[in-house]
Image (cartoon, rainbow, N blue to C red; front, side, top):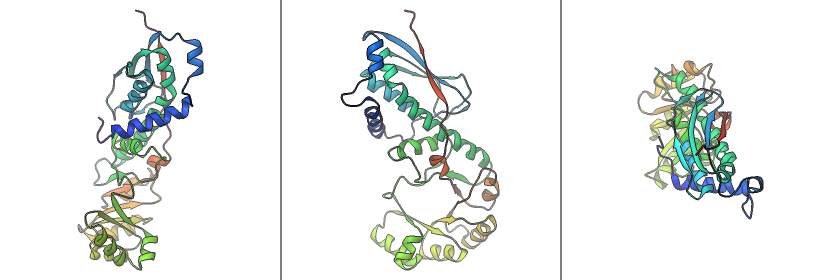
Length: 286
């Protein structure tokens, strides 16, 4: 699975991350001092904890970059796969120096992405059998949005929007600046007629106003389950509804039961712990 993963963007991120680690001029002083230039070895990427894997194609790009494309990356599990401690995720064979030079950058990205996928899967599992889907937000690590949103998809979630350019989101400050929900909606629709428009609402009255203005996607901010039910009843099937704010795994089913279509969770990307993955060097015997 590399669904929607922009390989050009991955390459940019990989080279930026490597440059941060290798300096200028680029060098790995420890590996250069201790390992002969012609030595080749095999390394394994191994799960140290149970979770969901995401980012192996990104890790492969790191090893390709440090080895000049000579490293062989044998991916052993599919993206989005549940793994347990001890599972071998990939086997890499190549110049030993390049394997060790790539190690930390590859693991930083892979562990981060797998942590996001693992956290997302917990939410997706809680929502199984309900109408609702878990959504991410723009609360991502600067520079890593493409990777983190990919990891959300690998974990069973859905991306809301990639940035400020692809979907218009009318929030409280836009409503205040424009004068009303209706005025803000009409301004966006007339300026960008082909861009999807979403509206943040906090009351039933705002939800009704937004729908009557033409909105077909409402972000219901910090509403209780009881208030959400009122919005669902008032709006019906005229708009997709997203609940956000103060959501937890303990309450997720209560919110899903209200009839909303989505639950958005900023924590998928801003608060997911990494999945512990290590690289173990296995010297070649031939």
